[in-house]
Image 1 (cartoon, rainbow, N blue to C red):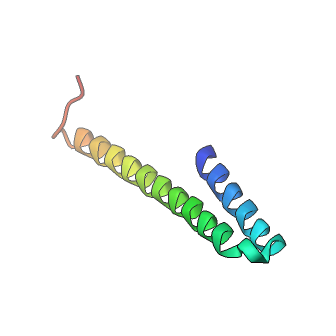
Image 2: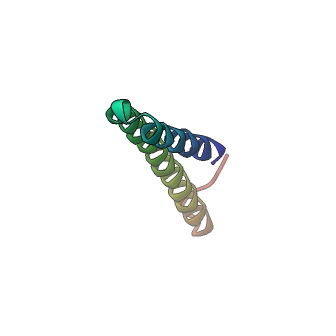
Image 3: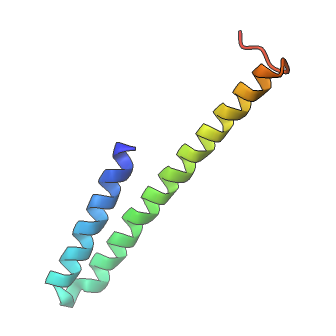
Length: 68
């Protein structure tokens, strides 16, 4: 989760740079969008991992899966 916070912090810095440098705002906003996308991708991957882990625990509880 620390990585997600870092990605979002970088995106915020990019947006701030866009305000400070309007002549290059398109570039800074594009960079911000990229960092936000990376954060969202990381969140989705974390969610999938959690859901998969929960599914395996549920199957083990039902006796449908044994961990070796």
